[in-house]
Image 1 (spheres, one colour):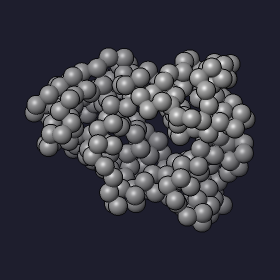
Image 2: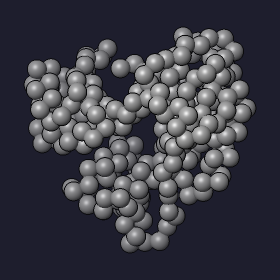
Image 3: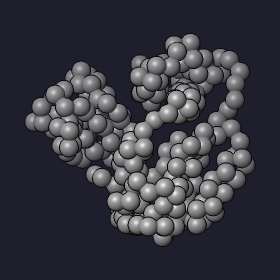
Length: 247
């Protein structure tokens, strides 16, 4: 399952900055607001909200911030309303890119996203132009030493998972269909098995491997998208060994 994490691995190699922490808080706040708006403000009955709150706590977001975000989502306090929207396009070399956003201003967001594609030799496409090149999946990561493979496999498959795979660091990766992610999360929580992350991803059905200038252009595109506060997730079928290049 290397496709969904290819750009994520590139990000890890580049490291984190203090500025990124503020962006993380912004994105986590939006996650909480939308989760509370869609499923209510009780994390016990709203697993999407429960996971959003969990991620916020792991990022050391203050409890008051989390509470206010939930209240904004449920309408208890006034605040900005966010919409979820996905943009599709092609980067240099024909790389397919999906951009999942959460925004309070669609006009601003689409203008920014379009400019990133244009500046890096790509183009923003219509809805459906590249989404057929991806399959929705759920990915749950579990650290090494938390449980054993046989027990995890039995629990995960019974809860609806498609597969359980070993990771390079000795942990596990549970793969689910998009509709089974929350059920498998709940089964893990019931069994008191702690997981590192659980997220919906778009897995590419094939990959485009680039090097040189085209690889640098795509890396720059992905960096620009990731730096935008409105962008929540970026998925692509891009592969390269040229990760240290500067665009």
